[in-house]
Image (cartoon, rainbow, N blue to C red):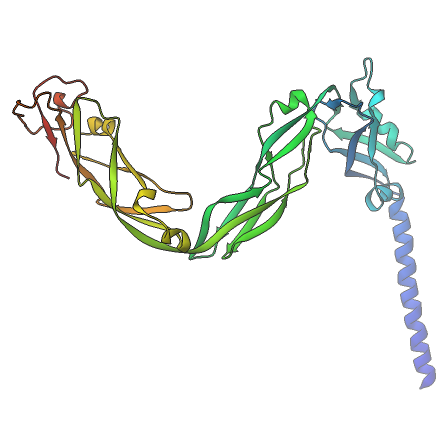
Length: 347
């Protein structure tokens, strides 16, 4: 019995050893074959003179398609890979670009590896005077709150602006510096986080700080009716008088509980433009409502306003004559010099 167990153990070791040996032989044969791989090689321009900056687009990586044996390509895939550093002094005279030949020369030291293709095909390098510009931080985010909650007010970013250094000709076109894209899902409490600034993907520019702090107020949402909000009239001409019916409206708003508790009728701005009345032919007009940041207007009552347009009296002893007319009547035009008129429409 013991001899049988010993024989079985030896058979297992032989089988395992044969499999391992076969795999090693197969792997050795495979790695001697020739293959093509595509890698992203970091690109940097060194020794830029003081007071100067690169004004042409320089990508942070070059896409290289390399051909070689499996053993040689393994160093690119499993090792540190090539890092392409070009000193600025080599760009002089007619030399203004990095070409595939320059890159092939740097990776040619890895025997058995050949550069087949490079993207982009060339990188032009030109200098300009270095400058510094302060620009606002552009927060790139997507915030979705849990049902029943919502964002109150704008996102607070600290610092709000950042100094960027680079070529003066490039800085002229920069009006803001974005953060990396951030997504906040199912939010039900205030957000306080640090967000990195996005790297420059085209030009060699450097923001003074790597990241910014952000704060977002999030509260449970509710609705509130603000009663008796006055309607203001704008763009009225001197010789006309516009009477709205009714002169005040009720507005239903939605927002954070704390923000709603402090909301007053004067915080809402409700306006009707006389120009809209003149252009109207239906007999009613809609008011425009603006609310503080973070407050949403849900509805208003009434939805539409009736109105009366009449000519202002020029003397105290004149007896005004009124008559009903439609919104497209000639008497409803600017500068009408006829008798006192009244425009009344019932919605």
